[in-house]
Length: 443
Image 1 (cartoon, rainbow, N blue to C red):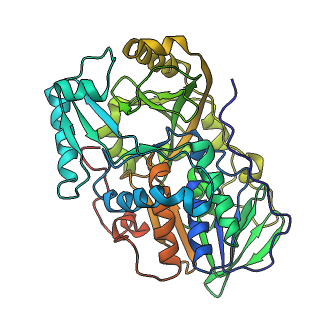
Image 2: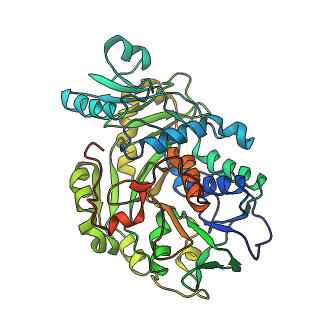
Image 3: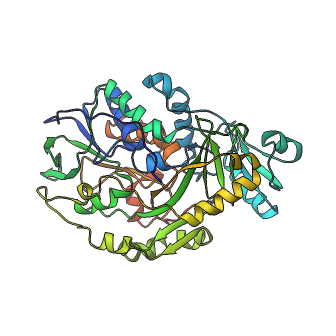
């Protein structure tokens, strides 16, 4: 069964010889950064090794959420929601954004308490978020066959279409002057006198003095070749979509059993509410100690397995020269196999909760690799030892909704403008400066 196909973005024909900034990676964070830079008058080249939005940016749930966010991300997510609200008009294209609201369900007092803790993170922000019970919960989610004791309702949250969004933003960035080149991997940095002087791509060198690495699950590999230690692992999430349904929930729902949101075509995107797969790979051993607090906190929702990815990653080159064929060219699109078990469980639970879903068909299923950090918040930061190199990665499953805000923050850092939010929590140096690095306990 084929995976999602993002809207195709035609590549520009000519690779420029020189630009102000190169963005590596055509996911939603990369294209948002390119848009923001271009709007600031920066000449920018975006290089994508495959196709725009073809990896996790088109494979996620499509949620644009403030609810159940790490509190360190909340200011940036508020900025991102403001961007989403005007994004279609700004770029002249559809992203599918709808402010539909999300319900996070609770089955017992313990889970209610956890949701109340999340609600306190939003105190004073006037988002309208609140706990709902009884008749109000029934009105918000009619026709459900699921016993919920309560739910956290976040009306400011919404959804967009992952297969539309990154391509639409990329085209918007091109309208503003950005050059978009696909099927063109950036192999390595060109460092001169201790700072960035350009990049080597598979099609030749491009001079620049600023590089933004927004490579998603590939960022650690690229950074490592440049001598930058970036603690990042990959987690696999499985998703499906259905054919259109006459009746079904308008508001997105998260529960332990499954998560569901309506799509623009009238179908639904469905996934497990909590289960993710962690392939044991050589980096699992290299980084295991740093990720131990996260694994200990999330062990109930993680399924560890030894698969062929151990061999695949063990055989990947970790160092190369600009003339070498790189792992990025050997794998243009990371397209892992979905978990059939996860699909069956989520589909069964969704149909039990919303019986009308059984009238639809599962028309696509896929998996995506989520780039995660030890504290489950991203790196949006310069690299202290390599002037001119910036990193925006490790969004830990939160990247789609926060992507436009992350792009704005990254562009502001690159151009030395006053940042829209305090970027301190997202600094790369937190992994080496003695800071306590771990996820928010409520995540």
